[in-house]
Length: 230
Image (tube, rainbow, N blue to C red; front, top):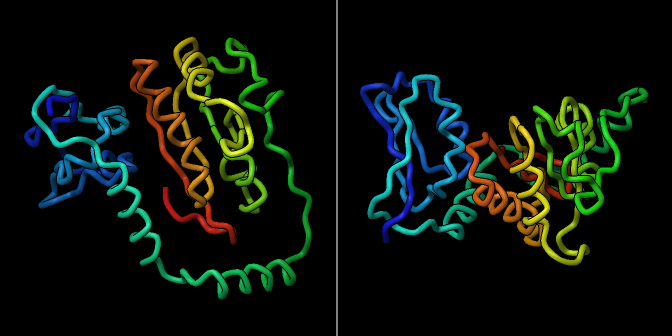
């Protein structure tokens, strides 16, 4: 099929690896000191790797390429997460409980910088969206990951929702927010459960519909409080 896909100019590539880090789909790898698009079916054509490249070595092109294979990308992410050390949920849960019991309690300051936070309630043209780093989070993430405020909400505008419980789709609202404001970056925080894929897909469709090239990433959190993928 003919579709939009990235193109890497190896002569311009300095081998910094920032594009490979920015590509949360895993389509780019560093080979012999150069960035290479090793899996065309992993490239979704959104171009979150473009802003990450300091040498302007990445661009878009329209050409014959295999269709984006989301199922293969998700399978690869699960395989990568399973290979991480200390991946046993039971062992990790015990470690978390032991550390929590031994550590002295300390007050945690809220990093929430605006109100409301629900995606369906937030106004589209609120002034705090100007030059904002946007965090779009499944509402369970803040309960599963203990340091969520400091690691994710700090210096971000936070929007939350639950695609399983809320009626309708977030994509249209998020498209309006991204299209009508100067958003600097988007972070999606989701749980590992399948229903959370709805919030990730809504952000992806909103970015595509907005027509903007904005750096974005997805963070997946396990039910026992581990970060599985960034």
